[in-house]
Amino acid sequence: MLLGEYKHNLDTKGRVAIPAKFRDKFISGAIVTRGLDRCLFVFGKAEWETLAQKIISLPLAQSDSRAFARLMLSGATDVELDSQGRILLPDSLRSYAGLKKEIVVTGMYTRVELWDADTWNAYKTKTEGAADEIAEKLSEIGI
Image (cartoon, rainbow, N blue to C red; front, side, top):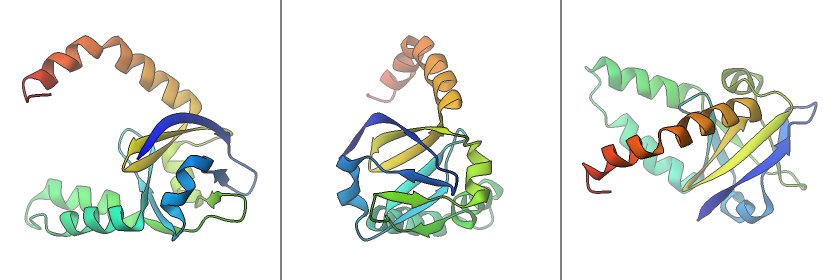
């Protein structure tokens, strides 16, 4: 289980440390790709394979399916943890997520999200302000 919120810094080479309690999930490597809401998603290999199989089975004739596949698959890259538990983020992904110095690493149960700290704080404030409305909508689907 990947849970929690952690603050780390992006170093000058574009590396960010994965929290120690998450590292076991990525010992055999990870996949980083463009996420939703301008963050990056980090998946373990098994979780990525499950998601990728679902993505490639989407109907090719539907433009939304093609767009989602392009977003997730074309930006994906293999990464390995170095001896200090860091991963190197490609320039293109850092640019997509607007990552500067301060990074927030969030555990989302089966994936990790990497956020620029300012973007995360704005997103979190907006979401917390709409929590009652969100909860009401989710109750309609049984959550």
